Length: 417
Ligand SMILES: [Zn+2]
Image (cartoon, rainbow, N blue to C red; front, top):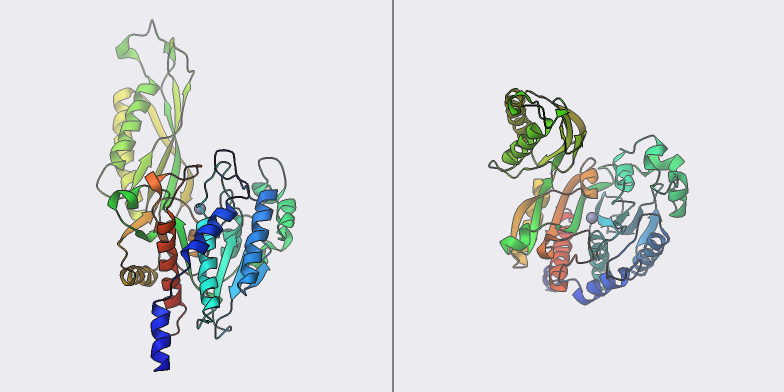
């Protein structure tokens, strides 16, 4: 009889929503801006203060806390069998220069709240549970890249915009550049990683869904597109004798928009353009622009790029220009593990929350964790899809719902079958 009661109380276990939302509000005090936003740049004194606060909270929740050589804070709530590989969650507490209260901080504090509620109910899971605060997500993602073993060897790459070198930065938060390789982890000690995050987009809100089960983080390719025409006098060059690079470029922008709008979940954008010589009385001779294209499937991106290339050839012939694509960024998609997606969906069903599957089109530490272990992500709605801004908002109720899904999912994953 006793064991049945225990089992029931476990399935009904809920996080403390008030405590979670108070913690989010308390952390947002550190680096608070006059407009209500938050500025907590990685390695700044605000970041250091926030790290101290979260560490104190972890210790109070009876976690073992350490800082690895990449400065990641790793809080561990011991399981019944500490020798088993752990289940990990977490996110980041650094922000962009004018960030909001939820991006990153929510995932860390929800992970902490999961441990708080387990600890006060004296529940030990089979596996240990880790809550990780990753270093500098908004800048270089050095924390999660160190865990996946993909840090770039050149320290110059990690120099801050203000000129501070990475040795000094990591020292400030308890890391050590010389030993950064030691931060690497593997599937042998992390069996799965689940990140809870605000969507930072409008999809869940527009579909009236409470939870997003993330299918993966999209792959991203970036190119420079150059268009070579010939510059000439805007008065004396007859229309039919022009090689106008900007007229060709305008058609390229439309072609990119067109492949973005074909059936599928891809997005494609020209966000940057430079015109030479950029003068009112000269037919443009040269244009450079960016192309950013993202999708969950690399094969689909390849086929869209193939279509785009043949379209660009037609434009080049029709406009008497040369159009070239120069690759400058190639990130492969990071797919979420189907069994973790199922565990998250099952949790939503048990909690009576409506959910949908969707890709993440923004980068997250979870994409690095996917390199070493099974990965999953949970999204909650962002009001009007706004993020990286003081007006970023997810209601206390929505924050509580997402954290309950996290609790239930982690409990499933930490169970030995
Ligand atoms: Zn984030």
